[in-house]
Length: 401
Ligand code: PMP
Ligand code: GLU
Image (cartoon, rainbow, N blue to C red; front, side, top):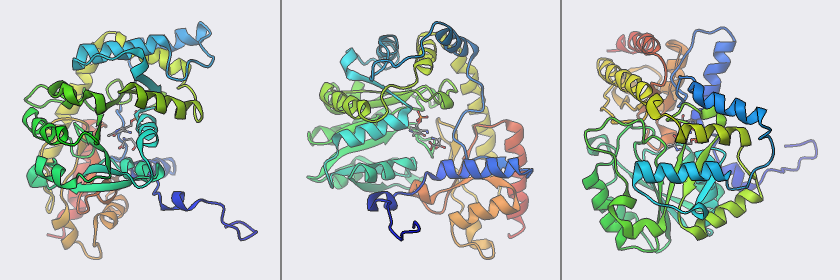
């Protein structure tokens, strides 16, 4: 409240929670700056540096004077690189007016929800979900319909659950595979079952958040609903970006591809809000998407090695139970048994605060991902850090058993 006792903050924004993933990362950084030996497993961002050829493209863009506004929807070069990427990697063909470049995939999702949601339209979101989806829905005036999954079903929504969640008010479903926070990816047969349901409901759009598609080591080749069901393409929006695959989180480049009317509406929103994404970052993203892709492999290999080590190590901690993922860089153990044993701790939020104080390890509680009783650990950090973190967590937790 101000001195005048007038509250200027709008009631909608008051309902929105700040991003928990960002809050934990900031808290860990603050403690480190204050000289505390905190191991941050909160941030979902690659610890690798952006590859040199991408940085060089940005420097060249600065020197060439590419420091002005660009077209709102992205430079022609980047839009072509995005079109090429979808053709090459996903078997999907888009025209230039079906592409919108934004300031990160987060911005793309926000544009999308604002473009398609009428007041009280429903958005189907399987839980656990990335923390930002429900709050972005709220900000866009929609209502989230959360579909709860279990560890036993690999945290994946079944066709029957989807069918039960669809109503006359459903506007869009958000699918994120491989998933943040579980690392689980939908198999072809599972997508086929979901697609069969979606075919029956032409009023439901599909947002496919594929930001982790390159960080994937599942047995089956990764696929998407658009390739499996070309009939669905006209109501699908593909969300992607360079943050995760190319270690470019700070550059803020994401993009969306979809039906012309929806992309045009998203571009209109962007033209009246942020305008174009950073011109220099766009030049860097062209180098990322069009350039040598061999930089992806070593990062993926490192994430897989860390995953394998971390999942088995977490399962040796008393009261922890964690299933393997097939991608992304997160472990999402069930810690309910540990919470029950530790004096004074009643839930995952308290447990995460306790871990930060006792073990000096920062993790994100499961509750903001829509799944209490769990915590999310990011393994986008060195194996050495992970080993230290697991030892500290085990030393703190095991003594209660
Ligand atoms: N979707 C998911 C599932 C994510 O984890 C992230 C990470 N922040 C994003 C989208 C957005 O990524 P960015 O805005 O950095 O492109
Ligand atoms: N997506 C990452 C995470 O889940 C980055 C932070 C954010 O934007 O949420 O940690």
